[in-house]
Amino acid sequence: MEVGILGLAGSGKTTLFSLLTGSGGALAATLRRDQAAVGMGRVPDPRLDRLSEMYQPRKITPAIVRYVDVPAVGGDRPGEASLNIPELRTMDALLVVVRAFASDAVPHPLGSVDPARDLARIEEEFQLQDLMVVERRIERLEKDLARRRDPELAAELELLQRCRQTLEDGRPLRSEGFERADRQRLRGFTFLSIKPILAVVNVGEDAIGEDAFADQRWQQWLAGPATGCTSVCATLEREISELEAADAAAFMADLGIVDRALDRVAREAYRLLGLISFFTVGEDECRAWSVPAETPAVEAAGAIHSDISRGFIRAEVVPHTELLAAGSLAACRQQGTLRLEGKTYPVRDGDVVHYRFNV
Image (cartoon, rainbow, N blue to C red; front, side, top):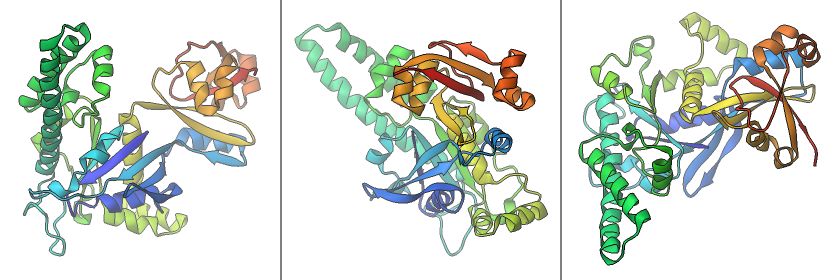
């Protein structure tokens, strides 16, 4: 799963990427892929922390999100240079950094600071790009259907005409309640406006603690599906990331900061991807595994190893809260809270799972 980070020039998107994947809690160094910087950032999870305290494992592995800092390309309009469309189309979700701080040293590319406007500008660009793709495909389908009847092509045409109307009305495709079959048909088009979007408002240090989303335009945007927002002060987060753990905790306490904004960004990105975490525990390793919500147990086993999925017998499952209360899996067995589940069991967020398999 990949999250593309984008924003207008001077928004702080690359700073945020560096913090999410570098000294701000990275699991791996960044690398280069097709001119885009790629990095792995951990998803903070206090449940894993508590399980690790109980087992004292030799290794602790949190869930991760792969972030891609999408590079800029040339554009004719102000601000357009931040939208590298081909790179963005491969992403599973988009993280849009919008600027809410003033700086004489770094002028805003649109002449003034207005984060809600900047987000709307980027959304409009996504819709325009999608509309161009839709219209080209409709034109080809109409020519093909004029030569021969084909129920599949006719169904695709009807669906794309619906998409065109949505886009012409100025609405993103994610606002449409597409059925599963329709979403499968649309999958190959890699539309931008259908992807989940997390807006990150990059505020100045003087605005920490203020409501960055009081503007009514934010409420209207958040009313749509597959959207989220949070705020971060990238300059402050950079200062925190450069401190030793004890000093960082003291610094945050002095400022009244309960948790780092970067942790909220990671958790929100994870949520927008529609992912959940289940855990495997033991003295060797305590680990969080990422799977889409409602994933059957046999498929979730494949996240660990394909052999476990192939040789699946059953899954021993207990909610992490029950395990922490009981103190061990053996105690959970005695108390009857450890359940035996089959292949079709939908793994729940926070489940601790022990797989039985034979290959």
